[in-house]
Length: 91
Image (cartoon, rainbow, N blue to C red):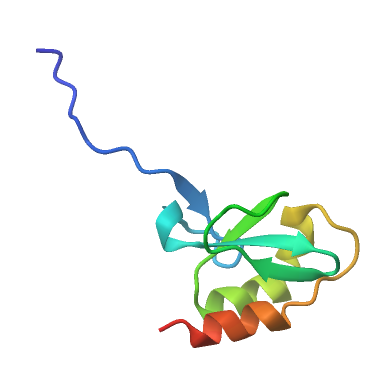
């Protein structure tokens, strides 16, 4: 026996707000659509994505640090109003 454990492998991503690594399934994928941040819960929208915890604290930190334009490689600012309403509706 090789001594290796058979732990399940789960993809991890980093939250752009709090910078903590979490399982991909625990985070919300965000993509840029024009000049706005759009949530992508299914993870199927085209383009570069950024991940954030579905919590207002992480969203506020990401907005304050201007992490979305940097992570999505977009010039200028991005509107996060639609993203805020989706996160507020998440239990």
